[in-house]
Image 1: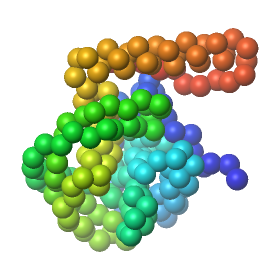
Image 2: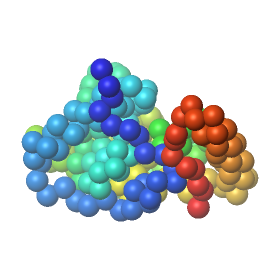
Image 3: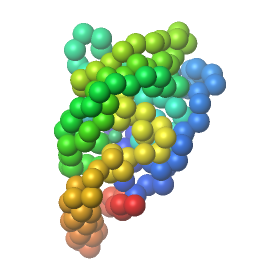
Image 4: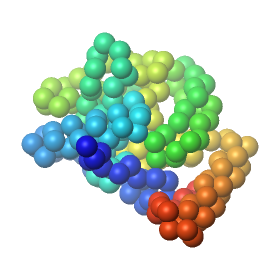
Length: 183
Ligand code: ZN
């Protein structure tokens, strides 16, 4: 079965815009969230934000594969953060690249779940990192903007190589992919 959505790749302007608050949890949003899980599992990934499938709404889906299963967090806000943690981070919209990025180690997050219930919980480790990463997507921020100067150089080089590979693919007509760009 075909994957419902194409994941937008760095260079796509939709990834640079601030998404809008969800006002109503409509049937359309519920279906979209379900489709986003399918897209995420196929990638494969553990988190996917609405802007990554071209939808300017403040929510994301995630599944850490342990215990809690599928989660949807709507209009999330980090109300408190604590400590520092270096974590090897990647992004489905920046394929193939991973970087050690320092962010707060623990956060307190509030939001709404898919049933419209308010949620409020603490997250650290992988979950804490995932939520901070996905929330960045809702603000139009990619992990590339969290890099230090050396990592940024490395990222530019790697993205140029991806671009060249894409250009070669295009030349023999075997594939067409999004262009890449780094601010
Ligand atoms: Zn991402």
